[in-house]
Length: 441
Image 1: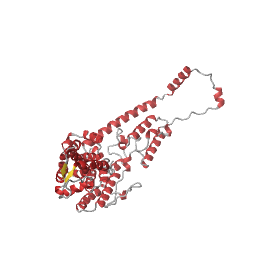
Image 2: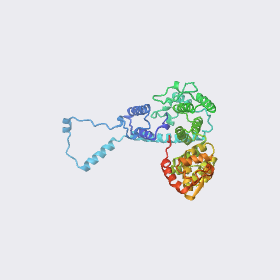
Image 3: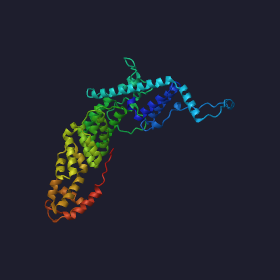
Image 4: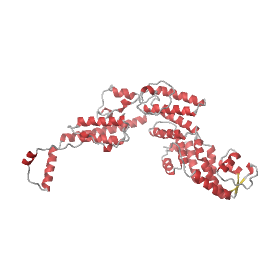
């Protein structure tokens, strides 16, 4: 694990400890520093430890030596005034000032500044060359690099060469398991290489899983295999275009199978991967996220998210469709909403299915306030029902089956709006006022 992946509080704590070290306690303090970080890594508490409150014993002030009482009596002096005590203390501090330690602190501060500049340059170079990298490029070569010296010698300005910074990359696991399919098991201990599949095997696994999905295999089995595949990628710290592809495919399968728990987990991980600059179907899943926020009725987060969209994202047809859906819902334009429901690109309609009944109820509430009577045929055409029987079933389950002609054929039945309106309002409050999103992160 390199220092780049350390949590910010840990980096600040390490910098503060290094700044407090002197020539007298440096060796002891560095050993205790490494031990503290190693213990936190082994216990998986790097991100949960309150590093601001951690204090190294070797850096704590030493207790002054206790002088012999007889010697103290012999050296007793008359009490001094406050001004005299202050002047004496200032004189002792000036005499004890170690100019060598101050110079060391200055050198250390300069080195940290160089390291910061180098890390920033590395990140800029990494983003510029990301698309030029081979898809097979990943983090496997970190282990050999950390265990063997560079062919060109050690660069003193390289942060990873600093003996005060632990190199966690040597702990990265490289799998050796050659099985294509493996059941998902939640990790309860440190993963072992013989139970983890390497990158090349994971690529073959994805190909086979896509074939099995086309052959209509059980979703439960497919989901189990994808979770195992994602786990093997995570423990090996593989984050590249292949990782994005795995999460995108699993998210689409989850949408198709109405598994919102897995979909939301994939969507959350994809957001982090896209933020790293890894290419993928970013615009497609941006549109899905807008629709999910509409489903959750999270207006504040939706407005913030829409405000961060780039011009390229706004030009994408799927994103434009999602924004038009947002506009139609906010304006109560149910006619436009249900036209877009039938013309949703990609898999947007699968997400709209989760809030379309709520919007149908809102549209019916508007109709019953605007009309005295309304026919089932009109409702079918306006609210996007496939058949008149589906329309009648929806009306009955929402307590608004008040017909002026109950014995007429379904296509000719007419709803008496004055009686239906209060029932619709009550059902809306009971069923749709609160939104529960499974697996939301």
